[in-house]
Image 1: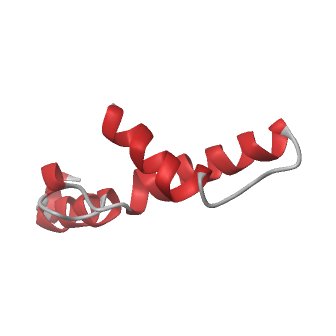
Image 2 (image 1 turned 30 degrees about the horizontal axis):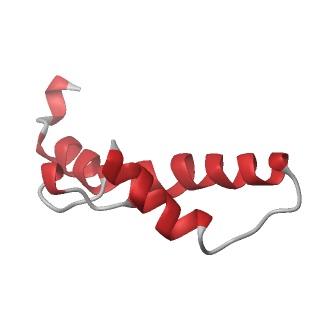
Length: 66
């Protein structure tokens, strides 16, 4: 969890400033939901993004079992 907050601060917080808390909250949501969780490569997924990992899993499932 500490690694996540370090990355969040480095990639979002320290590089931006917002006029309101609502603007900051919207930026935080967009970062987490739109990029961090779906596109960031992860060691535990074989250095692939969650999107790439999921696509690969669907490719390996036999067509008749879907």
